[in-house]
Length: 61
Image (tube, rainbow, N blue to C red; front, side, top):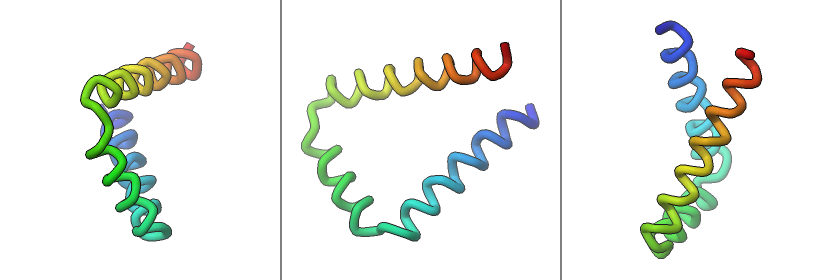
């Protein structure tokens, strides 16, 4: 459970740094996401999740 909380904390750190360093860029990315079809976002999310699982599997292997 500690590892899950650590992982969630790291996600917040990375997102916070992105917003702090490039708020305009993050707004632009959000606008792009709003214009992107749902199916494309869903596919990208599934691919990102699969890559994440693969990375964790390799590191923990």
